[in-house]
Length: 69
Image (cartoon, rainbow, N blue to C red; front, side):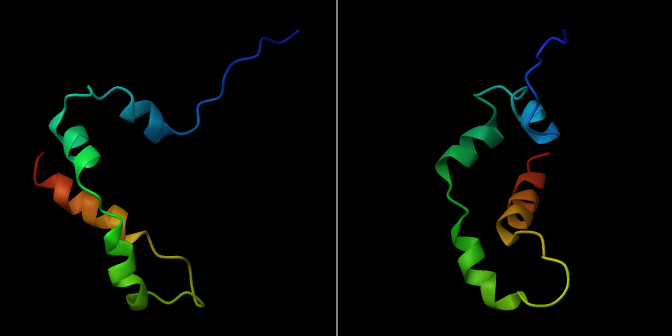
């Protein structure tokens, strides 16, 4: 019989788990709520045509966090 191996949910989650809990970016992410960004920018994206855009919250987090690298 084959051995059952737990499946990895995503590459991102495996990398995220390798970052120490006291890392500055994890501490910022636990304190700052970036979810307001999606609401502010929802009228800037077309929902009916084309491929869905990347989530504005994610894009702003990347820009914000890139300043610390």
